[in-house]
Length: 181
Ligand SMILES: O=P(O)(O)OC[C@H]1O[C@H](OP(=O)(O)OP(=O)(O)O)[C@H](O)[C@@H]1O
Ligand SMILES: Nc1nc2[nH]cnc2c(=O)[nH]1
Image 1 (cartoon, protein in one colour):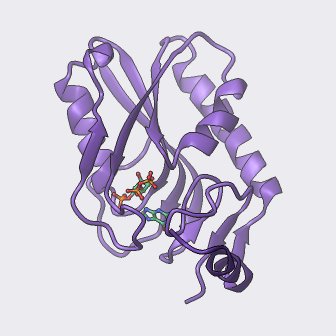
Image 2 (image 1 turned 30 degrees about the vertical axis):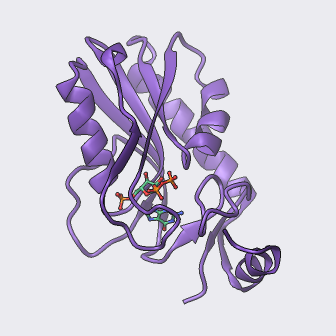
């Protein structure tokens, strides 16, 4: 865990890359696009804990159609800045069977996390898989999947805020920051 001064120091030296206003406009646009595509499908919406919790909390009240909600939990970064093995804590269960599933995550970086989720959701019998990511990182490597709904494009730097952590801290920020290079 970061100490209080360490957390403060990280924020003070970070670069603001998207303001709170842009974040709000982005979630609003995504809600409109998701509504256009899925409002007749009564999807099962799955929040990927814990990064997607802020995005989910802002998005769901803007989806004015019937849906069900649940969550799944896995981690690949484990409070580090480099990804490793995927560790599942709560897998998608039987509830996905025959459902149109919409998975919400905070960021698509190398895409390994979302690809693992897609594979499990489809293996457990979902009728269709959709994904919405609040941010997508511009990486040089090809990704194993594309998200159906993408919010903000972020540079190939470690970003935090609006649910995304930096060593476990600052998920609570309303805007998006990049760590100092
Ligand atoms: O596209 P990838 O390179 O696989 O990375 C994306 C994943 O990384 C973060 O999760 P993390 O493992 O940090 O767990 P968290 O949700 O607890 O922050 C984020 O929430 C995504 O799920
Ligand atoms: N918080 C955070 N999580 C990530 N997971 C993959 N890339 C990132 C990133 O840049 N920031």
